[in-house]
Image 1 (cartoon, rainbow, N blue to C red):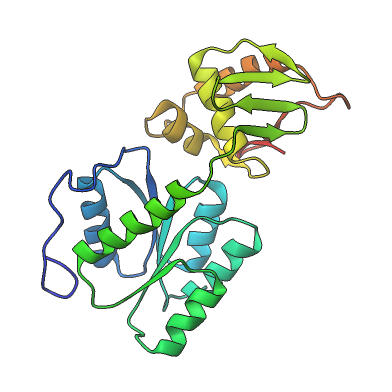
Image 2 (cartoon, rainbow, N blue to C red):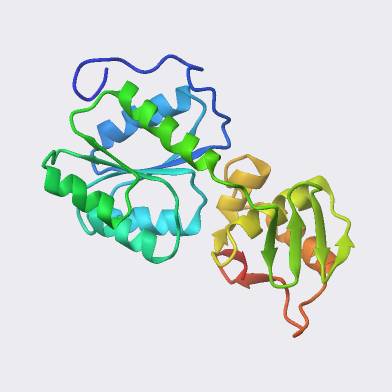
Length: 243
């Protein structure tokens, strides 16, 4: 059942997205958030739920998401403040606003702050899915970079070759996937659990040291920057970053 009691969950497979696509749901209504998460899961998305804007900002800052779906009226930090905070970091992740406020002024406000779309409550799950599909099409239509670059590192996205100061570094497929993920999040610290979910595709096990071992091997292959510092920075007790 949709939030407005009308149209039901969209049938499985209608939008045919890969499970690597990640949605951040920022919504203080647990029941509504669970309903959205179920619908997204049935259409091939993975979701993360945050109960308010503050938690949503932390999740978005430390993870990698393809779309953010956020409510407006929430405790601690409302949806408008969340949009402003995300855009202030230079992040252009697509953001869809959900709000019981249907006033034109509020819609304009959300769009001016940097939202990509605005859906008034009550809404149908079918329409939400269509809006997500639309923003993802727009993002897919943007020109993709030929390479991911950070300082002396360069990953060619066509040949999948990584070079350090112009010299090719031979990497195993998993190491290539790891450095790709870190480069796509360059300048952002990503946690061990987030790396496990996106690179190894399984949930975080607090007792495993697979991430540390793989990062250590990758560091050895990459060598050091010209100033002697490592390419992959460790943030003790949290995760890793390529700056």
